[in-house]
Length: 443
Ligand code: SAH
Ligand code: SF4
Ligand code: F3S
Image (cartoon, rainbow, N blue to C red; front, side, top):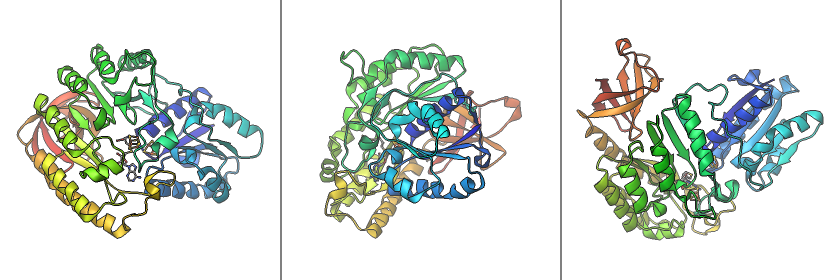
């Protein structure tokens, strides 16, 4: 029996797909990279924006013909969309070819559900909100080879309730993993040759807040991981600006292996909108956070997420975001059009912004940010950057690429003499810059 997993959404879902893969492998299934060959198809869905949901619905619809050709095919819908209130009923109504609907809490129960499903006829729905930690395997998930980088969850769920966001409703409350489990998993990964660890959570800075003793926090976890033999790079995603305290900044500044890449989602550069979003900080706080980071670590890379068209955002409010973005000079920003998510507080606000205006604001925002990104990258020309080699470039077979400490892609001409392989650390001199990429030459 072969399984195929299609993953939408963020690193949480990637990580869940790895857990699903490990569970199925242990249950005797084998991984397939060709959807037509699979006996079980898992669709791991995202619902953070309407566009993500539409992509998942479209993909699920496209599986109907496969099911008609192969009646024994099992199709399971997992992930955040499956967990969202009312979606399971919607899926049942629209797609008769779906066999299982399993929410984000149901992953550990997947093998049990699959065997039950195979014993009888009828759809299985499990969207119960009972948290138990998914199984973790120190080994790369079956079918995956990129063993020099690994992502591990340190905290599940989110307690923040930003008013636009569906995540707290589909991922539940914050649950930190036991530090011993994290340390053991990282040590096992290093033994298999992993050089870079990315710690995952919707808000990694909240790590340990749900423990009854307060001996562990995110800064301590970072310090302990930094001290492990054999670790080259530590990253984390995502950290909430509100919780990025002085201890954390000092920990990162004095550590050896923690990347100086700060992804700090700002969301808006207007204080009125930030308050309506329930973000818990204002622009002055955010600007001074960047100042503190940059004064201790001048070569930091700082990136962010921004939403345009939050309900009630006027032209003046949006102009404040443009001005603030011009002032703080981020390396890059992921920009999103506000998407109304039913069940969230912002979805019921009366003053929703018109779709056309939201599109125009997105364009105005990228028109300000992109030249800043290019400009910052151009400042790197002539400088040396340490990169972790990832492999061959997808666009140009003569080139390979790696990532800088700031997570920027640096493309370089592959030189057989250099004998480089994925996972090696090397130096490149930057010779050209684009908005999203750097070009370098091997030293
Ligand atoms: N926990 C992380 C990431 C959450 S989702 C954080 O707080 O930073 C990733 C990004 O999606 C968010 O930072 C936000 O910019 C965007 N996002 C979330 N909900 C959205 C919505 N309803 N419409 C548009 N963008 C949204
Ligand atoms: Fe959503 Fe806010 Fe939680 Fe991030 S911190 S997942 S944006 S509620
Ligand atoms: Fe999407 Fe769920 Fe991640 S909604 S962004 S896959 S936490």
